[in-house]
Length: 188
Image 1 (cartoon, rainbow, N blue to C red):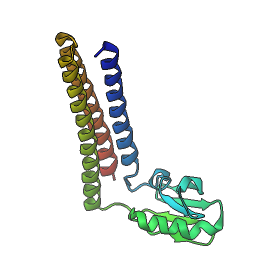
Image 2: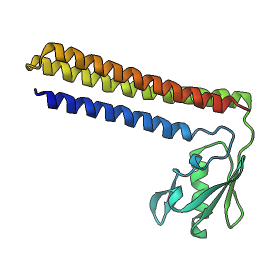
Image 3: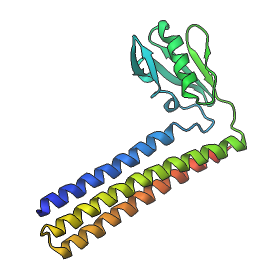
């Protein structure tokens, strides 16, 4: 196995870890902190002429104030579908449809609800770390196989150290994301 192939595989591993981190950021953005954020609903899938379509493609989603979201559909006929998508997403608020727009009023979070949200965020963080560790395991196995196939052992050891270093950096980034989200959730 050539040096280029091993380097290419390590680049793939880095991309996998980047995607795991991006996925975690996206999922954490969906966790309500008691403040109205368009990110909470913009990715919800809405039935639009029989096709499941992201909310942000069938309506504009705006914050009216810190605790209220206003969803203005492009077509009034989608109001019921938007309402249904919000109910099914179970985001902890009841949509109010006035025939023109759908309003979501977010109540202040209770201490218990905040703790539940922190647990959920930590669970998502752990899933991200598992994904990063699985990528590390695969990359390490790839390097070990390359060594068996004639790749220099000392270079293989350096690549393994590089993989471990990369894994550690991504784990720290995940911890930092979780720390920020936890502070955001627990701030009243």
